[in-house]
Amino acid sequence: MATQVVIGAQWGDEGKGKIVDVLTEQAQWVVRYQGGNNAGHTVKVGDEKFVLHLVPSGILHAGKKSVIGHGVVVDPIGLVSELKGLQERDIDCTGRFFLSDRAHVVFSYHKAIDAAREEAASKAGSSIGTTRRGIGPTYGDKVTRKGLRLGELVRADAAERVKARFVERNEIIKALGGEALDVDAHTAEVMAAAEVLRPFVADTVVLLHEARQAGDKILFEGAQGTMLDIDYGSYPFVTSSSPTSGGAATGSGVPPNRIENVVGVCKAYTTRVGEGPFPTEDFNEDGQRMGEIGHEFGATTGRSRRCGWFDAVVARYAVMVNGVDQWAITKLDVLDTFETIKLAVAYEVDGERIENMPADTELFARCTPIYEEVPGWQSDTTGITSFEDLPAAAVSFLDRVTELTGAKVGIVSVGPRRAQTFNRP
Ligand code: IMP
Image 1 (cartoon, protein in one colour):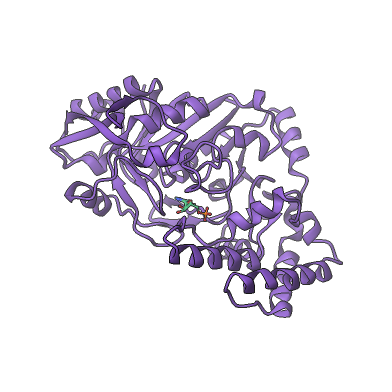
Image 2 (tube, protein in one colour):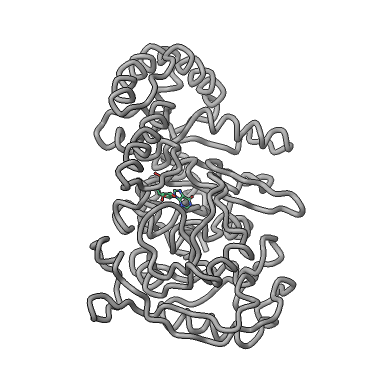
């Protein structure tokens, strides 16, 4: 398999970091193509736990090369602190970590604007529940052609331009009810970070092109998920990038006809953080149990995640828009103790049955799931390391996922460690 993409099929937090970590064995390059440090990828290597926000998890594999493509928005200060954390744990990035010179920069004024907008919206009862990492304002500046790219930030004469931006954006922050930022202090901080990042900045489009020409294998690491996609998600309760597989091409420069395999990562149930519709959300004991057993707290914000049953409408939609070739079903073990397991096979709205995701978010919010129930396996799967050892009821559940979504299950995961992830033969 030459070039593959790992995408989230739900609302993010599907366990992509872990699947990427396992699939990295087959690649020389791991590439992030969208999002920013709103993402939090947790990877367990032996007894060590790593939480990465921007750096692709391929960095944890000696000798593999990691790239942050131009579709990503980069908070230089956050990235420097992440690189420092890796260095302190003896993970050397020299010569194997590359940052696109076309990637847009997240400044602290973007974060301040994000927070001020969210504060104002929450008073009006209309907040999105963003991570407040400045993601929306940075992508906003990018598409309105007001952004600054990393290639420009690392130029020797960038400070004056950066300063002027802080002065201008302070007016916006104040108008939104926020507090103006200290221009000199913030400029100095970001310029110091730029200095550290300069050696990593490269034309990653050419780099990846040459890697492909040389026959290297590339793995794309999606952040967030299909239902948070700016186009396909439950707008406006979405992030501002394209986490779906198409984003891998636009966000990296590797053309779509060179991407050969799409792995859709999907939990055996569903979670969501932030506001917005979630038809299979379970407000009762089952949802609470999933949250407790699955440790459903955000890696970036620490917020507790909303939990509910597997939603085949969402998963089918993810297959449609990403071209999922195979599923990686994660956290199957979280369902170990349930007597019966529910899968939403369709929705009901205004007395009608619908099989496909509605584009209208207001309509989506009124959809109620039509459930099918299957027997639980009620045994501990966390010690299982091969597909053949799964209980029959768990295999039936996975088969039902395939029937309902049209994509085969290729990978199953029953815990955070590498050994707890195995292929379906
Ligand atoms: P933003 O990306 O910070 O603008 O947040 C927009 C929405 O995406 C909010 O509902 C966030 O909770 C959600 N979101 C952003 N990043 C992640 C993630 O990595 N996992 C899950 N949800 C996320």
